[in-house]
Image: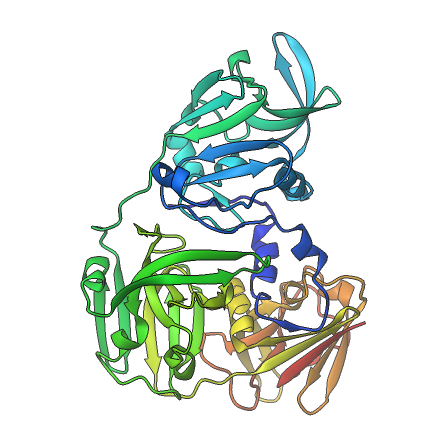
Amino acid sequence: MKKKHLMKDLPVLLIALMFFAACQTTQTDTAAQSKAAETAEAVSTAEKADDTSHATPKGEGWMVKVSGVRADEVWESNFEKWKDDPSSGYGDYSFERKGEAVAVKAMPLKNIVAMIDDADATMPYVFNEKLWNDGYDLTFTAADGYSATANTADFGIDELFLADMFDGEKTSPMLCGNVTSKLWVKNLAEISAALSAVSLADNNFELILEVGTESGSYTIKELENMDCYIEDKGNYTNSYGNTFDFVWGGVKIVNLINEYSVLTSDMTVTVEAMDGYAMNYSGEQLLDNSDGDWILAFKEDGQYMPEDPGYIRLVKVGPQNPNFTGHVSARMVKKIIIKDTAFKNFDLAIVSKAGTEVMDAQTLMSGVTNSRTIVTAWDKKQSVDKPYMGMPVYMLLERYSGYSRVNIEAADGYTISLSADELEGNDDVIIAMFKGDGSDLDESEFPLVVAWDKNAALVPAGIKAVRNVVKITLE
């Protein structure tokens, strides 16, 4: 099922944000983190709403309860943060009500519905447009008990709005739009969607495991019946700095691998997702059970996970409630490949006015496999094309500001200086982590290389193919 991103700029913004979660930093929290919407715990079904913590912590001001596949709350203080984002759709609108034009400041209701139209409780929420168009009932209840129900199939996704300003004056939350007057619900207290969690116990999804020349596949049912199935608590921190606690159920990944080959600390385990995302783990990392066990989870708070963030997700659980960063928690896992080669870690330092941030191999890989930008460079020495895969330089530096030069430095100190203006929006100039086919870079180029497409519309002045990149300084 295809989903549309809640925020229009998400393809660029999210890729730039999500892989910074594990950065070691000497700088203070960034403005982007401080403005991020707060989220914490997910609820598994709408029926459990009264007994389960909502994802959005208690805020300030008015509050609207929302429920559907899951339950949550929209607080005035949260709404204020969300509407500051220009891609949220919040702004001035004019609608006709009872034959007269009225002016409001409002946000498209789809942004609120995105919180409850599937089981994913993590920001940024995504809106299920297909589900909306297929149709389900939304019931809007006011603080005085008045309620009105509408079917989503009868309205376009941009016809219903949640307003907090009416004719220039602050107002309590109000449903509005070019709709009948009965749907103009003032003092809105609750939005309920006639949706329920989908049981995935009998789905036909299969997990693929490859160890050398051997391979195997497992259904969810088969995994759940294995002796290494466990349920325990764990929590992860996302790129917005928010932490989520869940009880996950799944199989210990080490035990599953050991059915084919004994996992050792010097092996590399590659986890591939259904959407093409990939992450490498060292055997040492997965074998470390000092605070818990890494599991392939397919249950979250007792419920089977939907396709996103499931059907299978790699998480760490245990009695100590271990914490891990979101970028190492591969979602939508489809295949696990075990390689009898050593995992190679590295660090990339980014120096800015605010301080120095250090990203490791997994942090970079998270961004690269989300972007998966491929350029075909021209190797003058060998007179051959050389495809590389990475992410555009400007995307890597998305959250930084106030610089005009980008200095990229190799391990031996060799440095090039590029204009930030010539890099901005330039998808043809990348920091590459892999060859074009996804295989590892040669040792002569590891860990990162600057590459640009031979047919680039704009080739920055002074650019050269820097190998063994270890540092970027912004001036």
